[in-house]
Image (cartoon, rainbow, N blue to C red; front, side):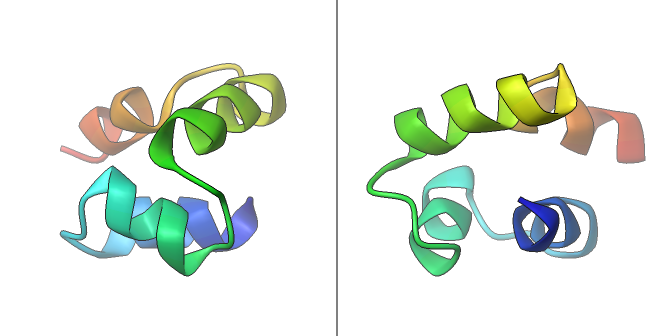
Length: 50
């Protein structure tokens, strides 16, 4: 999850690409896990960066 967070904040990769690079089966699975871990979805975290 930490690697996914770094990718979200420091790259322009799509969420699907990040899911693939961090070992998730797909973006939906990463999204659900990310919400459990961080309390927000990956898109919301990326929007906070702006």
